[in-house]
Image (tube, rainbow, N blue to C red; front, side, top):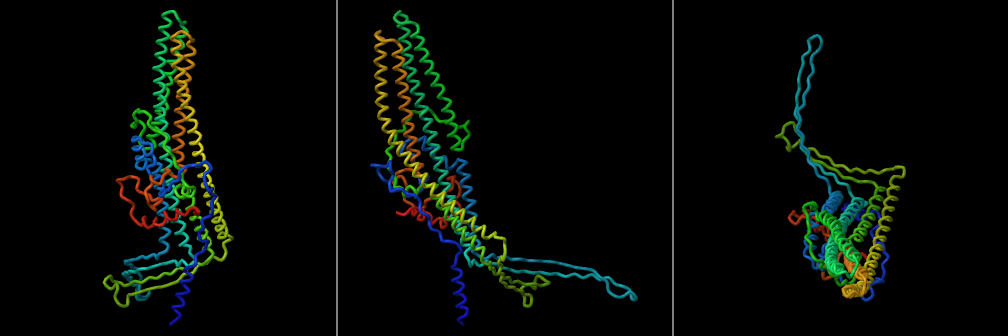
Length: 512
């Protein structure tokens, strides 16, 4: 009576064995603090940044509406989402290997033949025979996962699907940053045209003054020609800005999935101001950057593949069985005397393969090493990008202060030069020099503002989206994948359970 119990206990112990190493996340180089972060405020992120409306800090309704159209219409994001669904389906397919395969078979057959009876002396007689055969049977087959090959495959597929979800978040965040940059440059082009148009108005006034002075015989005609040249050159520059603006408008149309010929953004004054930027902790950066999270999940997938490869060294054990009924008439199926059944066990083991299995294990371990190296490299790149943008913001803030002083001085110099010219105390070249200096400094100030705003958006990308915990909803769903079209039905199946622990797993990307 004890033998079945002992056998089951031994089977349970064997079933608990899993080939390959259990996943242990490798360490990554992590600084204790950002070198450029002296005196910056820290924040607490809670969810993937690409799900947060980080662009709200710029207070631009047009930008808001454009960003919301990315999820619905951008084809690159749709392609990433389709890739995710493919990987998720592969993961579910791998999980199906844990369960037996059930099937049913029904056969209806009529057969016949002809022959002859008798001998040569009595004469032969041809006969025809027919018969019916009906069979209904059901069967089951199950590969016992003694060595964990299927379980490791499920583990690898789940991690790969999670990595693919991280890829979607990375694509979404990248598109959001790209859209912001294009929109910002478009508004900068609008502001540049406004500056050039204002300069042209001032130059037209200078031309009238020079013309009047020339008519009065006070100045030579060269003053008039210089003023006219300056005016027409500035007007030409203002017109040329339209080429850049049209190109940026077309780029934005592509990002929101609309034909460029049917898309337009109205001219508007530049309202963006540089927001106050707090700072994340390094560990929090890793929790939220989708590319780093995806790289970590690919390590887990590669680690599980080592177990899949090592399990090939052990025999494959499969159980199969069937039961059914065989009769010559349909109504006899299931009656006594018509039943049939079978049960079997199949044990298969490769004895010699020329080193193919060893090579596959070596390949799996090489892919693990590659995934580890990629993960650590992505971590380093993440910290570099954050340091770059923080340094850029700090230095550009200083430059903006100095440039503002230069603009004020240039405007005052222009005013004085024009008054002196009207008084006849300076040549018109002095006016042109002062006006050129003013326009140049205003353009430089605009370029500095553009660089500062671009740096804030690039910092958003480097931090994984946003920089304040207040912008992020409290949730453990780090990289859940909602349908791109708000009107589309949500994916059915086991997705919520499939992702239940992913957010918590991502929270431990780095040791606290």
